[in-house]
Length: 361
Image 1 (cartoon, one colour):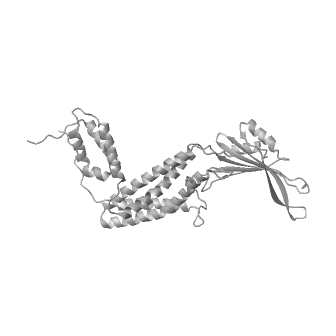
Image 2 (tube, rainbow, N blue to C red):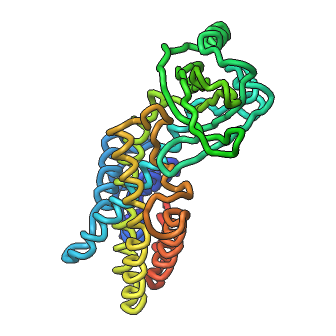
Image 3 (cartoon, one colour):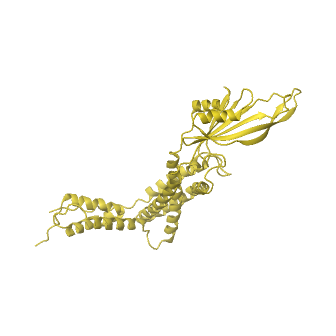
């Protein structure tokens, strides 16, 4: 007499198979049917869903297997650490990007023109939007002023419009111009600077007037604005969460690729290992740039008198490194990802026979 196959509710079997998704695919292919059959045999009559203790045990065991590396291969452990660190940097960039989505939007051209006129500028507006490999984007403008620039009047005008304004800071400068004889002369300037804040946006306002006693040379007063977002309270926590998620994801990726290589034929295994080494080499400089920005974000917060520092801005074309093209970080990132895909495809394991399903009877 043969033993009957375990009879159970289809929902219970589906529940167990769903929980088995916590295990690596290689484990499910080899032992999935056996595990599900055993669990169905142990199920109580009429049970429709996995018990909480079973669910926690399956999830915990599956995650432990996902984090486990092949034993006896020290180079795999080194590669896993490097992979985790690199993807941790990219996780920090992802968290930084998400945090930057909570920043205030920069004024558009029309808003910048209106704001510059509020600050005393005339119709000769020059505006510029700037990006940097270290900071959030900024918007700036420059305009001449009819007559003498009156800092107090501008300050009161912005305050009446709902801006929170700071006190004045006096600054001095020089400007070069040609006199009536065509000779270059330097004219001293007296300037006043203050900041205005509203709805997460900060604007540095700086106005210049020629110093007294230079009536022989026609120098016009001018005003310039620098608009930038302010860092929000969720920015740093998102960078931390992104870094932690990246580190964990990096280790999981390294473990999965290592087992995939172990199951591949020797020729493909060696080729995949070489490609994975090339991946780590290509992504090393971008990772260093990202961690450099992470350090600046936590150490400095923002440029003095300027915009907040960010992590993901390292991908912005610019002279981050004193060598190579301005798009070096972005190009190496794309190249590293392409090589990583090639390594994963190359390490495909040999064909394995499918496991039989559980047939209730």
